[in-house]
Image (cartoon, rainbow, N blue to C red):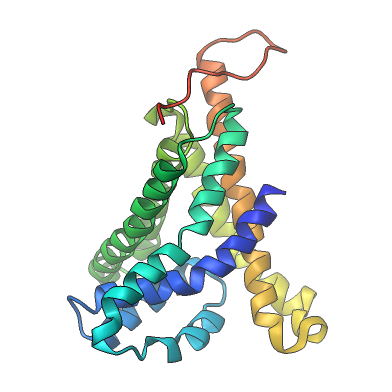
Length: 249
């Protein structure tokens, strides 16, 4: 259920997030370079990034005088997915209380902007690694994805999570996610045939289905992180979940 909610808010948040990142990157790069950078990183994460690039192309034609307002508006529209992921992580950890609403939005905004920093860093490192061949590029993408997941597992739950409880779930989720991406692309092309069922909205349906699979995998990693904490604390079998205290809101 939480994976479905994340997929729903992910679709709603992904398009404004892409436009936001292009606008931010265009402050330091040319507009065409910023667009290429963002879409190249999306292609590394999604089996098919064409629906996003097609839907956001016309939106990028913004007047310079409205860019400041547009950035704030897009930032606000991009927060939904991180708020939903944080709520789901709290449920995985059995946290009984949520953060203050203002703190939730501040954390979500910080993570939204962190996505831009990660994508920019990934682009630079991937360009450097491309000289070493495809294996080097895959290795760099895996390391960046693993680090990003570990940060999410550490920062989003409203409880004390140690780094050693984050890296193993992040590594496992990254490895399975890489295999799932190739398998999902084959599934859509050879088995599902979503175009016959959903017609003109098939690309959006495929995107939402992929986000659901990814969300389920990420949430499984959060549950694994919690179980590692239980194991480390050497709780007896059948005991209740660990409540080490929520962070102050």
